[in-house]
Amino acid sequence: MSEIKVDTLTGKTTANDITVTVGATATQSLEQGLMKVWCAYDSQAQVIDGSLNASSLTDNAQGDTTITHTSTFSAVSEVCFTGISSDDNSSNKHVAQISFARIGSTPFTTTTVRVSTNFDGQQTVLEDMDFIHIHGLGGLA
Image (cartoon, rainbow, N blue to C red):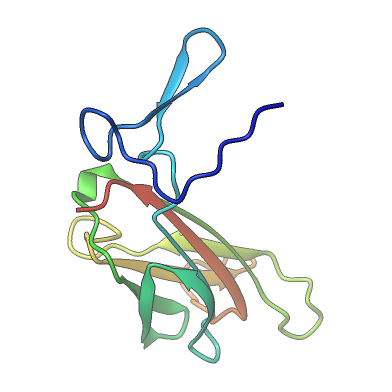
């Protein structure tokens, strides 16, 4: 088994152009495959529990939070977000749901993502949750 220990990886041709090859032909750009932002937060208390590249929360309304990123994404068309949520409300048997609210024509900008949460399929009744994780991929500017 070989091991490489380095502090910095830099592409030979371009700084961010590092390709990972898996098997004989499958390749992936290292930069494109890395998580660019994640945020674990409690929308009931409006507290970030842990994050990477997330600087603040804005409480727009119950069940409606905007997360601001520290570093900007390069283009809205090249960003992908996903997330999970849960809630310990009353008997803790709710089915928590998460969606990305539209900001203009998209659910996110190059610097923010707007998150809506509800439970038990009540899309018209938003609820704050105590455990939300958001993950974002895409190219940084």
